[in-house]
Length: 193
Image (cartoon, rainbow, N blue to C red; front, side, top):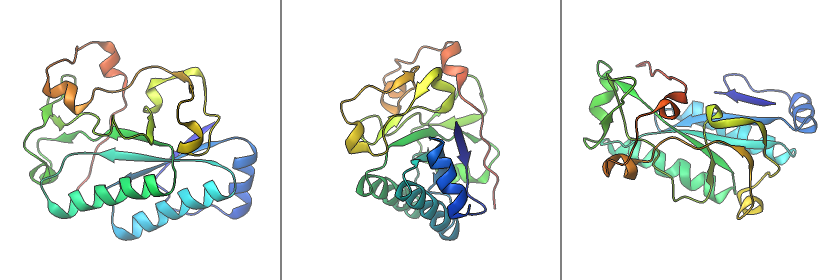
């Protein structure tokens, strides 16, 4: 079982222990756009669940920013993932052209071929060893994560992965083939606070 959450409420130790015993993977969505209060809660859940023996996966909603604070926030998140030996997943944000957040993004992005009014950068962490999982839409029915830390999973095969989203470098090189596989990923919207 996989749970994807933004951790608005914190589960009890009892619930976390039961989920860990049931071999549940919990993906906690984190982003440079999160407030410090939101991030504290989300990082706390990731750390606590890993401590009780659970499969704790930071699910980074990534983007390339022009805003220095957002750049710093995303760097801090990836550093925290690395320092805590977390297996991570990445999902590139797509920002609609009418969203004011678009002014905080870098100018070297791309308009998505399926969602033509949405600006994105593809995956940014293709070479970061902790980011070894694709979004859930790229998992096969036989997917099973056997590992709880990135160091344990290094060099091992993770059963049931079915590709991944394009990378920023492949988008830059024009090497992305527009096909149904590209359109498998879920749609996320960002609301301005």
